[in-house]
Length: 104
Image (cartoon, rainbow, N blue to C red; front, side):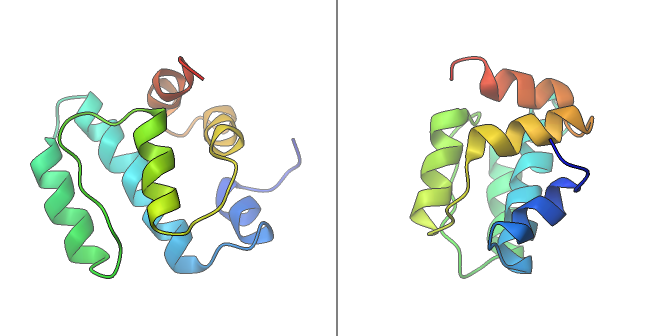
């Protein structure tokens, strides 16, 4: 991997600031959910408040397929596996990324 941060890498791959923020909000919020800090209802409220133009709705915990489908529904095209591996290698939401990548 190169020396770019994950955010820089996403922008290099054509994502807008809004798309990067959306992905980062999903990842950090669902990591907090894994830790028991917040639940999926709070995540739905938070993300729909900050990104009202985006489609987002969780009914439980997120997994790789759900995350991938959210990105597709919002027409965000990025290699999710690579994205999660980059976050993991930078130490961001490391355990959460491991769980999301377990079944890939």
